Amino acid sequence: MNCPEFESLSAYIDGEAAPGEAGLVKTHLDGCARCRLTLRTLRTGKASLRALPVPAMPSDLRAVLGSLAPRPLGRGAQAWKGSAPRRGPAATPEAGGFWRTVVREVRAGLAHPVSALSFAAVASVALFFWARGSGMLMPRLDLPADLLMAAHNQYALTVPLAPADKILTDLPRQLAAAGAEERDVY
Amino acid sequence: MEQSGAAERFEEFVRDYGERAFQFAYRLSGNVEEAKDLVQEAYYRVLRSWDRYDASRSLDAWFFRILRNVFLDSRKRYERRHAVSLDRSPEGVSEDGATYGDLLAGDEEAVLDALERRESAGLVRETLDGLSHEHRAVLTLCDMEGLGYEEIARVLEVPVGTVRSRVSRARRAFRRRMAGRIGARQ
Image (cartoon, rainbow over all chains, first blue to last red; front, side):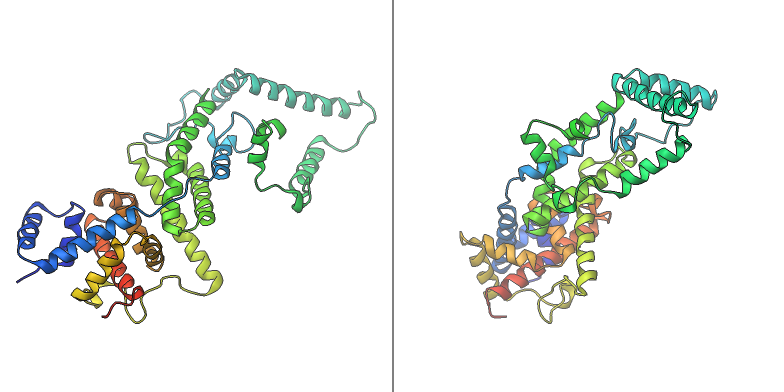
């Protein structure tokens, strides 16, 4: 008796055998106890794998994934600016010039209240440094503003705010338990 | 606003796929902590490549491909660090189905008997963990996630024929390994 290939039996239990192939397997099974045994083992193995218990998704993982969601402003938001999955080639720049695009984007950004507040904050900081540089405020610093900003950035990036052993690996969960979100404290 | 829309879409994505992602990762790794790490890494990759996702293609296939790649990458990193290969095969036997024959009838009955026992879950899990990463991935996709061959082909980015033969070889390897574990005569 010419038994079908193991691969045919395997595809048959998945419903993936070609129509002619499936018919041949089915006919063969009627007369072959050995292949019926193999088929039964394959089906039972498949069902056993399917039935393997899986624990529920841990709540701390759910909280971590939730914290990955992009925010309108803040860390990581720039990566999401205008980011729906693209449905085709990237849009080409609008004809009419670079500055028209800049003005349009600024107006669109300022339409959002949080964007407007942030713009006001940045403008205030810029005004402060201009005032200091012009001598309107005391004490007078001789360092240029961009050097001060660079020093601040360097400090922020290289000096941790807390020792390593104070860093909470489950910070999102603890904040959620306290009724807060990361954007409330950053 | 566009950014808050992107946040909502991502939160929806976390809600819809989070549980499935964790289940898939757990089925691949067999370990809660590793599954959590895999899911987090996968979501970070999703965030980084969200703009490149072509919405005309299957979101399932895209996301499961990312998860599978994260799993395989983690295995490669482990192997590099520990100078070992995690691609375990039965001793002296290749998992390539072409190099060894199928089970004897007595072994087949023993495997079926083991699978039909109520307490078979532990044995099934151990057997699965002993397979190569590729075999484990394809059985997870086919038998545990219930994906069809075409969907698996999209996830693995291989032809359907390759999926069919890979599933068949994985099942051969699974049966051989189980027969070895239960001490069936070969």
